[in-house]
Image (cartoon, rainbow, N blue to C red):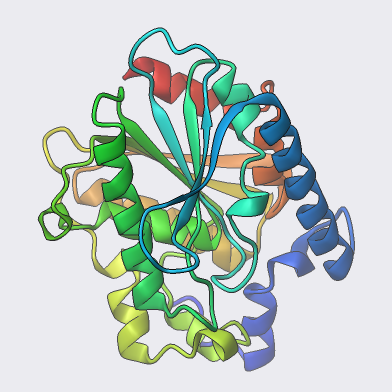
Length: 291
């Protein structure tokens, strides 16, 4: 966890600016393309699936879910819970249904989680909201064939924090059978020294208590299967964080796979979940079918 400490401020900013590492497009263009791809994919998903949109799991303005259901479930089905990225300060559930079509067509429900992004939300609150959304879904789909968490970037951080939850505090026992953490951040301390913290306004204490790397729980006997995925064209810091978090989970007894995906960057690694033939889509479907 010491790799970033010797870097200059400029180098650290670059490491934690994912759009600057894409070989496909310039920094601004890749962000625009990502927003366009996820928004268009979500519109296609809403047009083609049985949906329940804007379902409240709490009373806050951001505490809503978009639910995409299989057309005719033939009994209990698995549910994939998708937690969006955007550096905890942009994007929303409204661009987060793009992964639904290939999963729904195979009988898997997909839920896009909304939460209050910064500056309205702060890190402690976002972590609590995601945990409460999972507790809500555990109750709503108590007969489901397991919940699976999938998060991208900041969403991978929030999904990882869900793995460290004492669910007794939430009055729930979610049957989380797997987690797919894509291009995530698992140690927030380097973020304190970058532009990303301008909106988040985290103290060191807040960053430490919300760093998955620092709050790994020992794996339970039936612990979730965890896949930590990273892109070839993620920055070296993102790649380091993924590798070290995966190793730390494994050391705590978790079943962990590390997937290093060639030919993708921080953005299309997740956008391509709209495609059934994409390797990560297939890995998720295989994870679910094995349970």
